[in-house]
Length: 365
Image 1 (tube, rainbow, N blue to C red):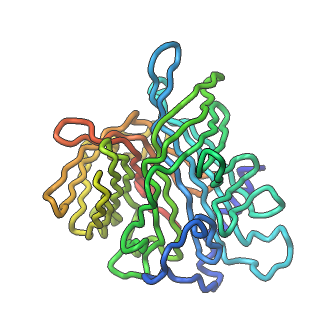
Image 2 (image 1 turned 60 degrees about the horizontal axis):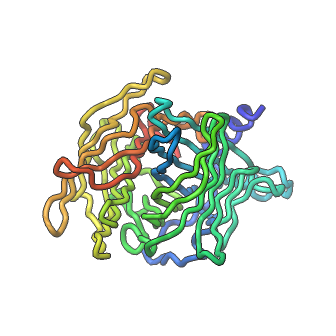
């Protein structure tokens, strides 16, 4: 029944373009104001809140490294908006939690879909407060300071984590206006909180582990994200070992060529550099083929950045190859979302996540 509901809701979302709804555009003069903009922007077509990170634990006296991610998506389908029924799907929510462990060999993940309402699913406005049943992501301020709390559970894993900011917000693009194509209609409001200090618990194979680590939080909202001719994107968010942070992305065409690119680098000294499209290049180094879907992903990549202080070349290597996330029962997409190490000059320089979408088929948003 849940799979049938998810399929129905996703079909409704894909039909939104025929609904004639006027979604607001992303404007260059739309300043991001926090904490209010941590909350949802329900007038826009699509929005997501995204946390990824690396966790350290000890199991049976041995060090253990894990990758985790949790994403909440909000979609405004643009149908039945005048329907007074509380069952009308005016806002649809999806969530994906996942856990990567070398000992398991493949990504563990789960997914949920729900209409907003009934006290069971919400994306609150004015503050970060997301819920689908007992899966939650919310910002809280207490005696020990501000933090984001995230809780989710799959069939064979769960986690309850506290993510404490250690740095100011990082506004990507031009003051949070992140362009995705030559036509500025294709853009998002986009900010990040890198270098989050993580603490909490992870349940894995029936065992509870105390964990610490570093994480990255992203929040984007848009009405026209993918430009015409784009099949998907490659994206990285890397917490650098020196305390800096790197975000970079490229939009890919159906032929695999780059249509647009961008990025933001915060150096250890706090200075921030924003990259123009020609300053960012992603080069596949090694591919992995999924035994389940047959999709081929460039899980090892080389990233080249033309910075104001000279060229920067980084090598991305995955924690494990099999970090494919099959979300066809919720968002309808199959993509690769994985923990990676960044090396420069043969030495590890940071850890974060690589996202590869549109490799199985063109991503639909």
